[in-house]
Image (cartoon, rainbow, N blue to C red; front, side, top):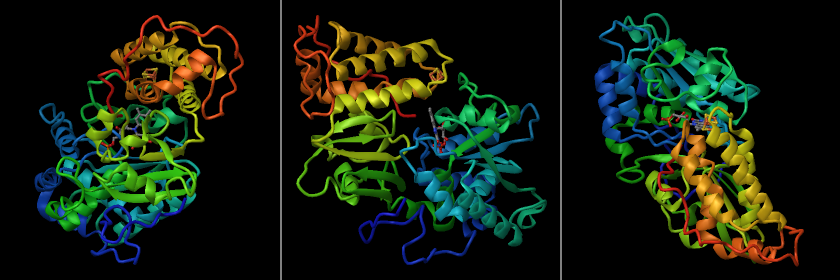
Length: 451
Ligand SMILES: Cc1cc2nc3c(=O)[nH]c(=O)nc-3n(C[C@H](O)[C@H](O)[C@H](O)COP(=O)(O)O)c2cc1C
Ligand code: SF4
């Protein structure tokens, strides 16, 4: 996937600058972290306001602090860092692009996190088969080792610091942190109930920081350039930048965007819809993302603004759709994907997402039943209310955001067996319309939150 051209003046924190200038000496962030010591390193990351880029937006310094302190009273001395470079969403190549384009930043961030929490080992988990990224990461590890920054006496500190690349292979759920930990332990994976969080009970039962690859690279940049400089980009709540994978009818690619960039500006990076078409919707967050209408293009790309709108940062995927797309068709395909990928451990998710997918398929096929929309809303509320992992909550978003913003289009399918975009082929034209018993207001279960 190609890198999209972004406006001059946008910061380059995660990806190297287009002119090739890295701006700082290699591994200067790690050297500075060693100079600051673990507490000072966490303080610098806290001052930066860095939040996790893997979807949750969790404050990175809080995670590091929790892992650094966990088990101390009980004499636990082993800790781990796991960098999540899996890239679960097939519609987003953000993390895979980062691993290939800025392997040194990811390795450096992994080592800095390990140093900060008192871990000796950091593991970068990468999808098997990503040979170019794996080679790039191993090259960066070798370079850090040759510079004396890794090994039994990292930078003369007397501290052992190792970074290694491990490959993992699985389906969508493998990106979820507790599943990833099990995969690294060689076990079959399903998400675990939290608490305890991995910061207390993670890899091999030890305190573990699981960090998205972009978050690790951002941490390296912060230690090299300073928290204040990092805060020059993005918003006060969501400082810095993030990678988006933006695709539309006119093209697509990966771009580094400052947090707070509007969805309109992100769509424009991929050429919008091209000539002669209007943007109808943007799907934000990946397969479990929200489908937002064109009048939400002013929404800033931040964790909170997207959550309020009914979408989420998720995998960084932004898909632009024009009037030729059918929202019912899109939502039902996404919901089916989410249902198929659910691991099955939790009954409301296992059964509920399938029922939701079936309702979407009935809508698209013109075979809806009276009460289907009410059932859809009930199912979504039940699923969200009994979440074990974030997949459960997020899998409801495509259909719920569709219901919230594209009700006339859904009603056309439901009541008249018509697909205004001409995409679906309802089979039951001429049948009596399915009359709704009530009018679901709904929209989106109130507690839905980002992964
Ligand atoms: C179904 C599912 C898939 C996920 N896939 C990924 C992934 O591919 N990469 C990732 O970094 N986080 C993924 N996450 C989020 C991780 O569980 C975890 O929150 C993240 O790796 C923590 O890193 P961060 O704090 O830097 O965001 C996924 C979560 C869910 C529920
Ligand atoms: S909520 Fe869904 S995906 Fe998550 S553990 Fe339960 S069944 Fe698996």
